[in-house]
Structures are given as structure tokens and as C-alpha cells.
Length: 342
Image 1 (tube, helix red, strand yellow):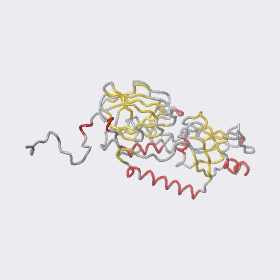
Image 2: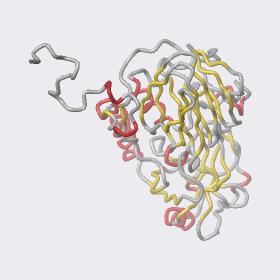
Image 3: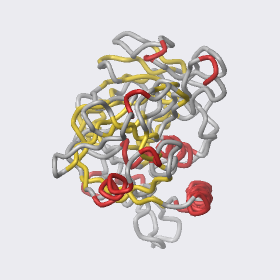
């Protein structure tokens, strides 16, 4: 069983939970930019969240099935179309679907962001340094290209047409941060202004990081900040670059850096940065370490309960080509059943 890539773009890659434990060797964790979308897709299909999936970073792709299979679509909503027998029909997002043999699936961005195609059974790919994801900044793997055939693992079996209300993280909003090792290097008035400033997500950004533009146009500065020694950095760190602009590091960031860090985004809130569309407003709120640990625990509980929040998708009878195969009203007797007919 496989998926054949018919069309792709530079931001379409295989991703999983990444490769922890290699920072000392200069390799960041990588993996899916929106880790929540992995868990949502797995919940919709009833499988573990660590299986490789297709990540679409604001780019389109098209696939053809070689066998019937189940999929889930999560992350930033894309336009999804299934072509079967010369006819196209749209597919809903945050939903599991059954794809027939020989069908073509087209995915294209709506407002941008990171979208995920999760096939039941995951995608079989070589294991490199404990992971199967592409890490383009480190030269591991590559973007998918037309003609690639993605082998699929065994489907554990389960329902389709199930819907999951996504964990809220789109559209920007409030983001919780904790102090970094260099927050104290910034004058208190600079930190307070950072806390009170609304930022807009810059259109420029990738899996390495996202630039933020202060609404008032004024940058930030730590005295002597450009002469600090390089040290370990991690996803979520907010570096202040030489021109005073904040830059939030993401999953494929470098492992060391010399820019001062004014704060660090909680891992549970980092998907809100990842999925913020261009020009979305973002506000940062400092929390204590204890509050941060509590927020992470709450987030873990939400993710562990996703399967309990699944519900069947309500289908429009007018759009159901196989309408006669459904018993839409309980208790109706088949017109073909005439055992007691006079």
C-alpha cells in the first residue's frame, strides 16, 4: 500500500516527533512544526502519534492512492479535494476520511500555516539518528518530489468520518513565556515594554524561526547584547536580533546562538506561533516556572483526552452519492422485504 506524489513543493516533507538528544552534536530536535497536529491526526485514526506523516508548510501537493486507505487531515486548514471517477468533491478538515483505490487527493493552502496529512499506519521511511523526519537545515532527508512513492505501514483499523474539534491555536492571540537566562540583561523598562507590546507575525518565516514586528515599530536592545558568548538555544527562545527585532526559534533552529534572548515561549504555546497567519496579532505574558509547569501538565491532559472528544461527522444527504446504502430513519422496513405482504 502506498501514496504516490503527483505534485509537490519545497515545504512538503515527511515529519514525526523529531530526534531528541542530539543537541550536543549540533542537531536540533526537528520533527513536526505543529506537534499538536500529530496527536490530533493519530487520535482521529486510533493510532500512536509518533508515526511519520506528510507536513505541508504553506505549499500545495497532490497524491494518488494505490489501495483504499484511511487518512486524517489536521493542522492549518487547507483546501482539500478528492477526485474519483472524474468527479471532484471537497473533504472537510480535522476529520478522518476513507480514500478509494486510484483516487487523487489535492491539498492547497487557504491562509497559510502548516497542514498535516496523516495516513493510517504511518509512512515507512529509513530510521536516521532515531527519527524518520526530514531535517532540511541539517541535510537529513529532502522535500517530497513528484514521482516519490510513500510506502505505508499496516492500518490498525478503525472508523472514518470522525471529527475532532482542534486544540485552539490559530489566529494568534496571547502566548505565555518564561524568563530566559538573558532576560535580566535587558533593562526592566525594555522587558516591560516587550510585555505590553502587540506584535504582528511577519510573512517571512520557516521551520527555523519566525520574525515578529512590533506594532509601534520600535525594537529592543540589551546593553552589550551583541557581544555575549554563544550558548545553547532551543525552540521557543525569543532572540533579539541586531536590528532589535524579536525572532522566535522553531523546530529546526540552530543549537547555539549569540543573540540575547528576552524570553522563552512555553512548548505548549509554541504551536500558536507556528500557526499564526501573516500579520496575526501576538501578545506575550510572562508566567512563573510553576505556572509554566502547570500549563504544560494541563496541555498534556488535553492531548491525552482527544480520542474521547471524537464525534461522527454529520453528512449532507444531498452530497451523498451512496445515499441508498444508509438507513436514515430507524425502523423503516426495506421495500424489498415482502415476507408479510398481502
